Image (tube, rainbow, N blue to C red):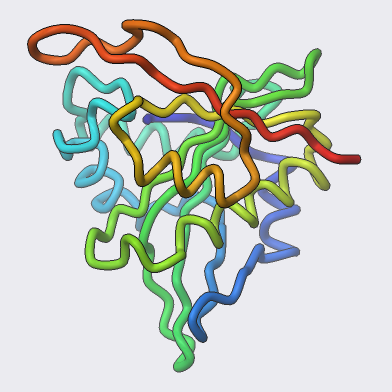
Length: 197
C-alpha cells in the first residue's frame, strides 16, 4: 500500500479541502504530514490488511519517513498519490481515520488504480469509505481529469465490493487464481468507473 506522490495536487488539495458530510461529520482528504508517521507505521505493518495491499514485508519508520518527505512529488512523476482521510466532528475535532491511494497512474490513457483503508476499525461500516471515495472520485475526474479509475478486489472481500459498487464502480471481469493465499489461490474481481464527462 506504500505510495509516493503529489506536488501540483498538494496546492489544489490545500486550497479546496475536499470534504463530504457524513452523519453530521465531515470527511476531509488531505496531503501527508510528518505527524502521520506513527499512524502509517501502524497501518502499513498491520498483517490483517497485507493481503489486500499486496504487502509481504514490514515497513520501517525510516522508510516511511522518507516516503512522507517525498510525498510532495507530482503524480505525473511518481505515478501514485496518497491522501489521508480525516474525520471532523461537530466540535471541529479532527482525527485521521484512513487513507486513499491512487496508484499505477497512466498519463497516456488517463487512468489509475484506487484503494482505500479506514484504518480505525471502530469507524468501519459507517459510510465513511463511500464518502471518502466520493471525494477522491471528484478530485480524479475534475482536477486530474482522469478518464477512468479501477479497483482490484479479491472475490472474498464482499464489504469492499459493496463499497465500490455503491460508489458507482461496475464489475467488469475476474482475474483467475490471481492472489496467492495459504493453501492455494483466489480470484480477484476487477471494477471500473468511467468519467461520465
